[in-house]
Length: 272
Image (cartoon, rainbow, N blue to C red; front, side, top):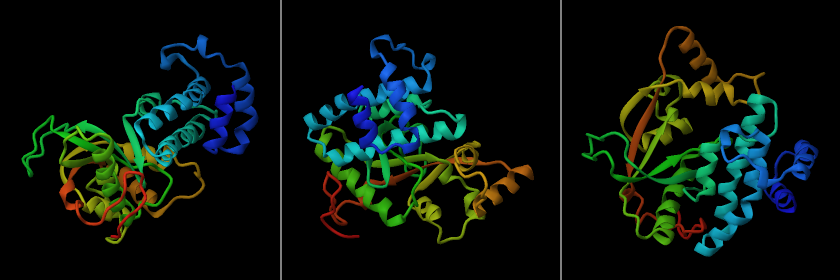
């Protein structure tokens, strides 16, 4: 219980959950935890992750990874607990497949963005990249503006990070598969928007019909009393029969190499 509450405080979960989590932690017995995450309650998932933070911290320390990266990466636990609360009204975590990546040290938050080793899912014909090519996936945490300069800094930080801690991993491209790369956004946003600036860095070579934008813009939006301009335009577009897509794009990492250094800990040693 002590470890659970320690990390609950360190990660700064919403204070209004304090009593609920403390009472659940007092009853929590990890030895009786169901091994199948799908059969656990959301609260059991959250407590299990919090109880595992000490183990994860020790693994980071053993590998020499800066504690700031650990804390930034674990901030996703708070985010997805908030998403669970938005959707269900309860305290816990339902997105266990996603959170397991964090506790298996498969994904890392480096500045504004998250990065994960992976392989190309579909062939990138414009650049001649085959399926299965080792790449580093880019993921975009919710909750903060997508400032272009911050993203560029994250790519450089990721290069330094993987070179330092995973030197055996050879890759040339960053990839992203997201609704933020969808083709319709060019119709709904001003050219100077952060999203379009982010999108412009990628060579987008594949689109898949998807309504994932609706999930992030509406289902996971905690303030359902206000509608942004983008939400209104997408809602009207869907109501008129329009189809949304996710886009799959790549960036050649060599464009960031030698353009100013960012240490593997995320502290900047150069400038944009």
